[in-house]
Length: 151
Image (cartoon, rainbow, N blue to C red; front, side):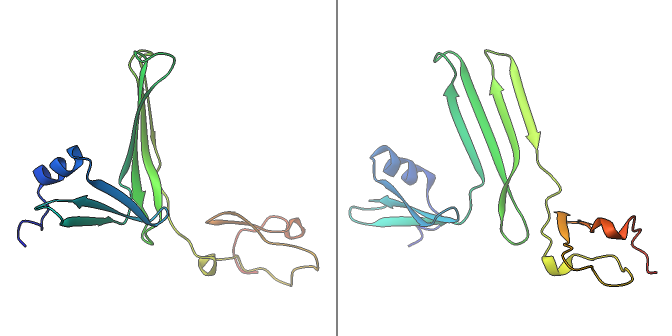
């Protein structure tokens, strides 16, 4: 059994080269498994389960095959396991263009954690609270300017 764990990269490559690899989606967007048939010996199978995407890499071209474009997207993960694109690099050598985008500052905020400023009185009938951002709440205009302090 030692020849199965950890998996041997050369045996994985051999299974791939022989066309004996299958991918099954277990939970769309979340989990998948990769199976390598005849990994160690005829008739056996090694299956690896993957629970998140770490990166997406694309290699393509624009108008002609000599106009190569590559895209590398790195995935990040929030504390609750939500995946997001943490960075993207687009490169076109023929156009002498590289674009890099970094996505930072993501955080989860539960509705119950939104802290509203203290105000006197009650909301007039028909007024609504509007969530603008995870940390900003817009109050109905009837209150005017509110500094968040108690009155």
